[in-house]
Length: 221
Image 1 (cartoon, rainbow, N blue to C red):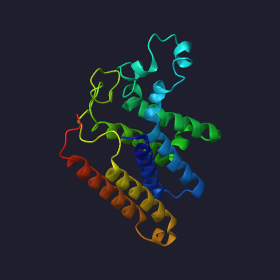
Image 2 (image 1 turned 60 degrees about the vertical axis):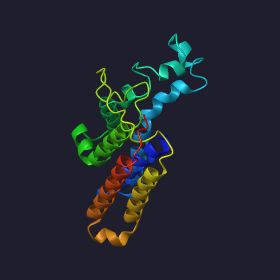
Image 3 (image 1 turned 30 degrees about the vertical axis):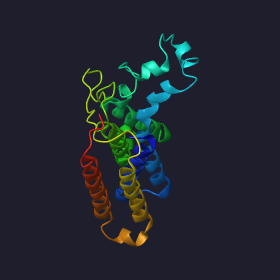
């Protein structure tokens, strides 16, 4: 999947989450943005493709290969490796927790966790959504993603969808995002079963996504 679809997938999770929250608008915006960043973060490993990678990072670490070669390997910092693992998802969520703990210095870790469990759980899910979205893409040179890194087994590589131009899937993703944002903004609905409606929107989006993905009738591998 392309980075825009990944990012909006996280934003959609965040937009769903804020309908379960009783926090203020600033905190809710922070939740949505954190989820978007979480879904974006796994592709940080594509820095190996940047034009200045070899001359800057490559020199710093005395790498013997170019970034383009590293990208297509199975080293821990190659694409679909450590950054696409379940452990990195937990590390990202821990970093979010650590930042929240610094911001609330007077609170114990347990209290910070209790007050911010929604944003931490949604950030974890958003990160994993990116990883799961990459599993149905072609195996290419990796054979999937290193979900249980450092295991040498790579998960996915099914070839159900291509890496980009999945416009129907992107439309479903942004629809879930905007509908849940509107649900939160439309204060009249807040008096009713807002959480139920938000869950329904996310569930329908998930079902439609799977239906579209599994009915391509073409092996992209």
